[in-house]
Length: 564
Image (cartoon, rainbow, N blue to C red; front, side, top):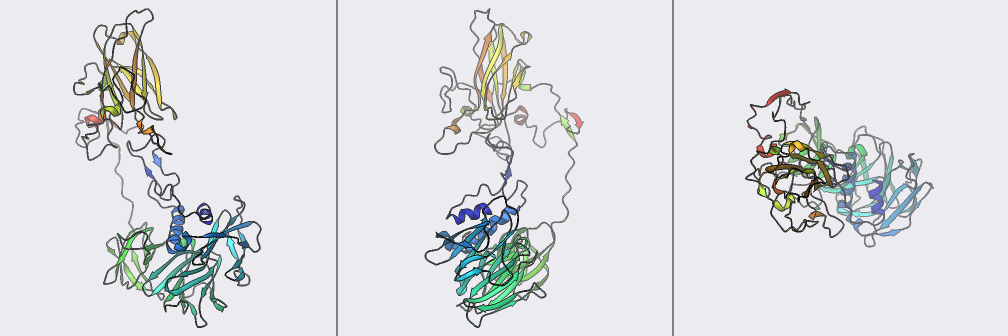
């Protein structure tokens, strides 16, 4: 919140949040530059849990939605009255006069809580005015305080030493939510006439005091841990509408969700306020007063709703029980949580394929239905070797998963080395066989996107004067990501680029030509499995054979029990 609020203090009106929800790069979704667990400290984690960072984004988002005046402001000079450690940046809307101040430590490493007064706010020399009170700011923290803000119902916030979460119109009254850390004091002045009143509606709640001053009515209160303290202010607006001030601590803000009906414009003001669930996705009120919401619950929850005409609560199609109404106009009810966690099945019935080598490495393997590598043109980079067909997997419709090649050549008998040039993205790997005998591999590194690897050819693996088959499997770590303007990175090839047979130095023969065939994910661009899609089925033999599919006949496979 220090970073984002400082951006606002600098006049930023467009902020990119990278990222909001984390996730898992299943299958072949990712580019090589990222890892499987992809969340970069996002407020919604890979496992779909909400973090404290999400609440900060929520608080900031609802503030900006409730106070559109903040989109057009000019900087002005503001002061901290009695603390040299803190700094303040301030801005004012030139049309409405609304202003805000952002306070933070001038030294980022300070961890102590500082107390201070803000100077020259709304005609007051220093705020708060209440003797013995001050504004508190935790170390490595920031506060954004509003002043001179006019809002719905003819109300005006002269100033507040509490931060504003949201301002809403709910039925016949306005609601403003004010928050701070638990234990901190708060002071708010609302423009009002001499007949204005304020009443705390929480029986046996925290101590509050109210008084009239030169600009209206002043509220003094404490932000109490895990407590929602309602204060009803009458006579402060010009439209005859009451104002309900909800004083909460930061913990309670995590439970509060301004909501609107599903399908509503996300920039429209919310008109329902819900407390309790972990997350409220949408909420609406039926003509008969049923508040229906879609929400996430982690446990048994008391749900509280502020909504016009609310008479019942329906959460995820379940009616709340023990429904009752509060003195301050909300409705509350009990919703049972999701219950115990499901029992996961035991994964201890494993079988292993009996083959001892890659089936496609066998010389007799039938590759008659594989694609012949015969394309002489390519749009990929770099251009294929002049005069030779492209071996790039993408040219043959294989864009995800492993690409598998079988190269046929008529052996002379003096072949000693095989050099393979390939590219699969950072951390990719490569494997090679000759006539079923494993030649070796390129195991990859975290930074190597391509390789030129050479493998010794065992003499007894060759079949002179007859057909020989090289099998090459190239890992594909995903297509490259381009950014920062025009880029050709997305044209980077995947798979083989070149293969060279090296003869013994004593040989005067020309190296034989290798004729290549390629296979990959089933169907290539014409998916054979449209249910799992291109990112979940790759080009390994087992994937093309259907090892992973339910119903695959594995009767001849060996039982191994535990997969380890």
